[in-house]
Length: 416
Image 1 (spheres, rainbow, N blue to C red):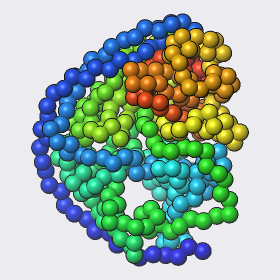
Image 2: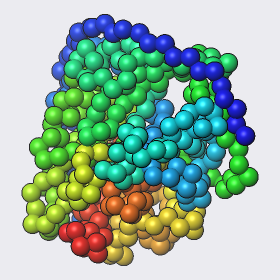
Image 3: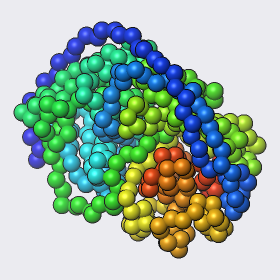
């Protein structure tokens, strides 16, 4: 039985500041697939005017945690432990004095996920789940000063979600604050430099007899959001103006298209590159795109997928598949021209083809990636497993093969 802890919360009012910008030009080179997965590719150069800050007014240390709102957190925790190899870390619920919800915190490498479920049907979380199904609510960012992060972002136009507050227990204090994003998604700013506990005040250590081995997942590489028609640039401007991010890469509907559907995407990165948020919007096509399908079934804008990094993708994906994780597949023809397209790679092609792992190259190196099928019954949230070997890009050369694989799944669901 977990014991209740004393939890103290204090809040602080906000102040305002003003940002200062410089202009910089960034040139990025990447490969894109122009016809079919078995043809050669052209190198395209993309030049982007990006705002560069004199001073990074919102320094980020990385992703602190990702919180999912789910219908049954206990079962969801079992799934992520069994299928993905996450480990018990902490718990908050009735046994710790929380009367309206239960939260299970799991960890693998530097990745922390929080699975939260309401305990009553009239809880706001229950309304969120009723509308969206299971999905990501919170993208929590690790900062040095959560109070200042709130002041810096709200003074630039962010809508507050949570006023700055300080949580304390016998292990110290954690300061937090939050702002609203697209749809019902939010950013929380987490400052934990004066805290020695496992997770947050109010949580107790979670220990169960069931502890499957890890699968080699290390950290959150990036997190992708889907927004509505003609909303991508609004959120690009938000990340630039409010959070000091820069647009490091842009893909239009000519780069990301198949015979039937298309989308557009821009990749946003913070100053040190620790946090990256690609943003997708639908584009006109003959049939319904994957972004349109997501928006229909999630019933709004939200997080499409999390990309989780590994340093041995063959081992990780083999383990995940053996645990029952389902991945998208591409035709074997994709691998016939792979070496000609990306050049020499360290890995043998046979296991890559067997597992369905994709490869792409940019000026800095290459990457290997693979995408799960949706992990919910609604065709919404999925995961990407990625290994970077120098590459800084996002697999542009794989877009056509990937999206054709997604379309095959859409057609099976009757949603293409």
